[in-house]
Image (cartoon, rainbow, N blue to C red):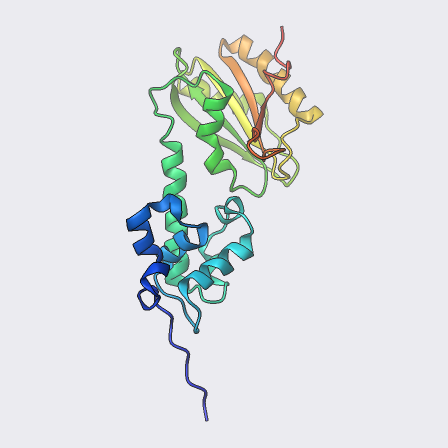
Length: 240
């Protein structure tokens, strides 16, 4: 005799005080845990598990929200209790969050600090599992006019040539650029190669009269609340 299939546990079947949706309406999203917020997206659990239990399984699998943002729907779909529809819902919510974070820096605001440039790049680059090299194209007022991904490398390296960096800058008639890449290891400390590439770009920029404002390396904070990037200009690697 076949065992009965466990009925999915719905959020509305929980006591009202335990329903994430009702708690959000009453207290606001800040009062909810990460698992409860994900449970609202899931709506129901499956195989006898509640939505909150499935949400906790998702967080357990990825350990941090930073790791979760790098997951695609296929990885989510492998978690017990997360079907294709739920996986797509979570992936869509994460994509919207990344796009909203990018809109924090409007196109008409000058990128005149490493913090501003890092804020623009962070949400997209944190998802990469290999090194990516990007260039921000700026006008004379250091406002963003374009962004290009130039190269994808390995876990610990990416190769770029000055001509590839400045080609889109020349085509866009950019007055200045900011270059950036990520360190998937999480440690943003520049390597000797990073410093050498920076010096090559500065020299090429002077010949083309396109200023290289900075070279950012994005990783993870070395301590809670600390910066997750380094600026090679701030480290003193920009000199005549």
